[in-house]
Image 1 (tube, rainbow, N blue to C red):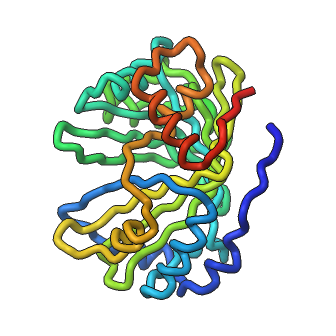
Image 2 (tube, one colour; image 1 turned 30 degrees about the vertical axis):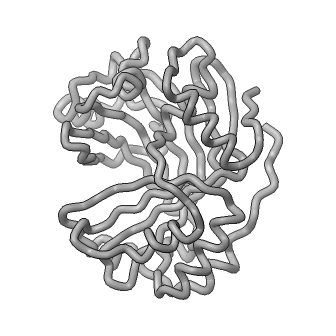
Length: 265
């Protein structure tokens, strides 16, 4: 795809104090509330400036404040995981592999949402060469079978998502913020590709008992919460035969936010 012009966040992130992965892992968010937000790279500059003034810290891994991610979502031939989400099924799963490019580590991840809206993630390390397929890995297949109703032989790569992630934590360590930019999608089954151009997806994970300075920052900048799934948006944009239903409205919200039409090739 033609490369979009993007804003560089390297310099703005220098204004935030670093935090290590070990320190981040010590953050225990009990009674956690997750919220997603949609905005643009231009607004993100203002969010980062306000976050620095409020004492937020930025995760640094491999000496980098921005981390590229490469994920592959798997699904059945009939796209059961996609349709479970589209149809509003309360208990559902997603199965993906994810490569943390800076560190070179790769995992098979199983995300399960329960009927109370809580999401739990389980994962196992796999070789980097298994990003697009792990059926020959006995340990990974056994792990999937023990944590999911799906079996490896019933799944195949559906969509690849690539993006850059910034992770922030507040001074009290009562909330984390993941900020995803430069999102690009490729559909393995249709061969179609697209990107979200300068759209930014933010996920705020906070302790439900604590006040959130970030929520106030986002409200001041008129960044509103929105329910959005990268996998479901990606499939909506790249599979013309899928019955995408309400996700088409999500795409229109994305286009309205960035003021541009999303193009699939």
